[in-house]
Figure 1 (cartoon, rainbow, N blue to C red):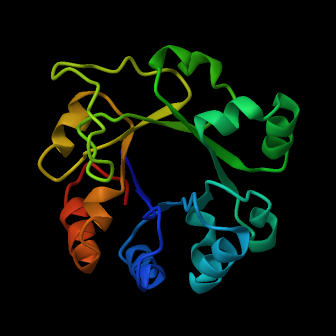
Figure 2: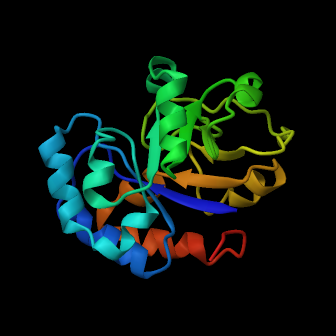
Length: 200
């Protein structure tokens, strides 16, 4: 399974240092999502990350920074996906970008022909968004599509990772489990990677 860490939505003290350490520990998929930050703040954040890890980073906004930093992964929120015309998405693919998106309705999976993987959730009650309740039944089984990978998001912890695997998800994305206690972010990451479920 893929293990994806998403940045804290707001800046944390020395968050960039922690992210560099997570890369050193083996993180291969990092999504930079700072919805309330301007482009110069996101640019400054990227400059603090070790350039050798840029291939592991997906940008959630300010996609124009990708060329500046040699980043080849772009993420589209549901709204951004709807507002982006197919020709533009085709152009990204032709230039070698790997694309991901977010969904809340599994019935649209077959229409996501341009995307490598999609976040789906909240699978369990969200840790980073209090009151954001999980949507899946305990006995849920994902019918895996042939091409696109489906990544579970929402409330995933060491205690329920096994359930994600049993539900047939292709991976898990983490926000609150890593960042709700920033001083323990590295420890929390290590508690996840000890499971042999994740790609190394």
